[in-house]
Length: 161
Ligand code: ZN
Image (cartoon, rainbow, N blue to C red):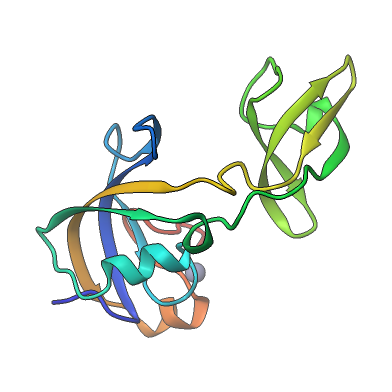
């Protein structure tokens, strides 16, 4: 079946910047699954894979406005170093995860002190043209529970139940 709204897509992908530097890849692990049409992926991604089927491999590029938006002025926030997740040692330019009242978000480390760090809260991929290499592993109709939760359950999806 073809990818459309309310299908669960299981896939591998490799994300690179426009210079070909790999940013992330699922290739070292299991395929990931997401629910199409619910904003789980960036809009440009969902648009690009729409209509494709299991077994297809393809590549596409997304301009910043279809991905994480244009580059913006740095938005610097000061947070305790112990709140930065993803590494034990931090230096300028590293990307960290931080819990906020709006959920977990990615920030870029600008300056690290002994206890406090300055981070840029813009998305690290803002302003970047992104290249995706995608392999569609499977496509299935979402279950009503998945649609009401707004995300995929089962292998590669959420496991919170
Ligand atoms: Zn759920």
